[in-house]
Length: 486
Image (cartoon, rainbow, N blue to C red; front, top):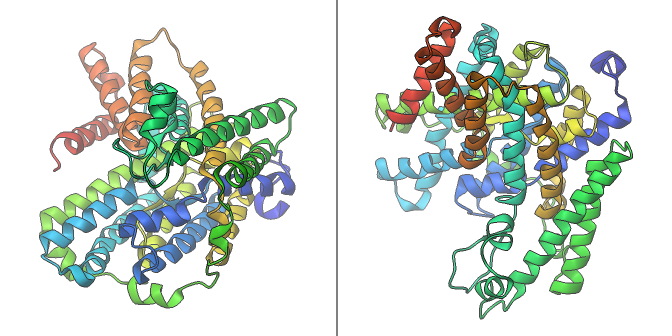
């Protein structure tokens, strides 16, 4: 382990790295079931769903192993959120554009859309080998680079308080799901919220579930904080376990449900036959190019831009939090990290899932002490095991993962102290990015808006020579992406 990952050089140990890997995995285990749900339109149990489920586990494991051995970084990969929703939208549009039949049409469209991911991955491998992606990283102004970590921190907090936990209250007259920050801590008074979440079929169970969720989330967060103050490196993992146990007890005692009910009928056998039949190397180039060359190229470019800056942002932001960056904000072995990401995307396309990218939840493992590829390798092994134990990973309550996401998000905000608040050239792009990331839900879009803002301010304040040529190009490309690509 020492020879492979240089543990002493990075000030870590096998125990710390394994705990960090488990922490990261637990915060992102939701992707195992959520990704096939999103990509197949919640066709749970169908051959396509089973194929995407296996592809999610295998591609995440392979890409993360590349990160472990090529870059020796503690970053974990999986099909990216946002990118998978975009992929599902494209797939649904292909069904309509090509007039595919309802019976089997979605699977055919899915196989056509996989061509986008394959081409994107190959392009990224070429760009990574030629160091072009590395140059793009260096083209991001220092102030913006310093602000990426805190912006991701706000995004993590937004996910933890918001979209990570949605309470579905069936049979009510209000919009569902209900969210912690928007609804429980929003403008509704308790009685109004309780009435809104009540229905004939479920009574007030939804409101009680919300109470349990809020209590669990904050208890988990406070446990993590208190253990961290005592210097315990496994604080995030222990906090998540404590939160999970509290939630399971609450389900049994207050909600009257068995938290382990799903395990009784769960299948632990990997559906390899379904993957072979539906997604494994199932590229339908004929249908894809029937969309038209312009549409096909536009889709590929769009995926490339979003994925590239999502990955760059995650790597730079998480690395800066871990102290892995140089004084100029660059990260050693960035080329290898980006290459690993590209290989993961190709693996995802070949096995049958959308773009595989570095997950922002990797920050939770970094905070737990992960500093080398052993953290990533641990998470990769867990993804492989989930081929057999996915039902167990699925019972981790969302409230427990929210505790970790909120805590890590708070810590990442500390990076703001490195920004010169007296320099408008820095703080305007950074604060736009701080708002853009959590609201848009896209790291790449947040960076794009910051780059455009930085360029415009420099040009119109009479300092155009301080902007590099590549920064101009990136800013123009984002303007085209935001306003011209439809």
